[in-house]
Length: 323
Image (cartoon, rainbow, N blue to C red; front, side, top):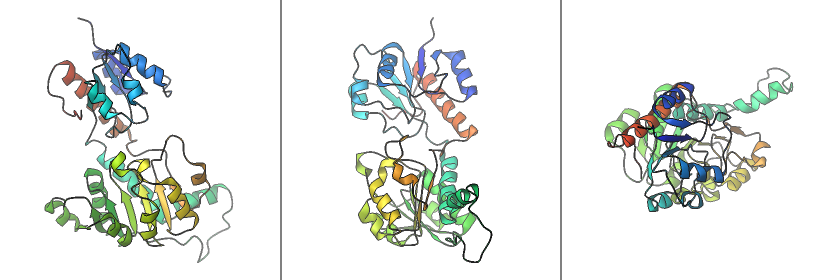
């Protein structure tokens, strides 16, 4: 019996690619180059499974291609707002993702950005590299304390809770959060976390606001100019969730006016394109979507995809089916 044909859209950790080679007739992206819509259509027509990542766009126009062979999109990543879910459902395409394994690494990046923004780390690095630092003085690059400050979380899922744990137990931060329904009391008791009645209450009260909500129409530009206007002038915004949760124009306006102290971003609207005006700002820390970028985490994500593929081709229950 011939092996199922599997198409991998980007380069994966080597150990996972080796396992794919053993199990499947697999086509790898050895050059790790971004693929075109036409190449995605060709893959859907010629492979039993296609494995996209969060940087690949699968709109309805791609998914509706004629003579489709593919029956499963096994996504390398938790988020899947890069795939038109309604079109996938209409085409009876199964979709899976990779939840659970990237919680700690993404929370680590959120804390990294918080510390960078609070202590002006990126700004200081640029100063030293440009040879513009002329020595220590008592009022040079004064910044914000993290220890004992209030961390406000928009969303309170696994990643937000992991960040809260690091912030509360590591830095003595006070935790407040908003989600539509209260979190499990055992979790909030451990973190001494307080649920706010609205996002607005978090924005007004927190010294650091960290975003942990999903992307999509319901959260598009959730953090807009009105929300920024509620923040303390000493506050910082951290986004490791999805780029389009934040209105980029409003963020630029706010940072230019220095209406808040700073921001830290790991995700962007329309990435990998980054608004040029963000690059000109000093009071922002920018990372290239590194949330899950550790060897162990990315390997575990690949293993999750393998588990979903194995279950599908064995006609067993898929562990991480989302559609």
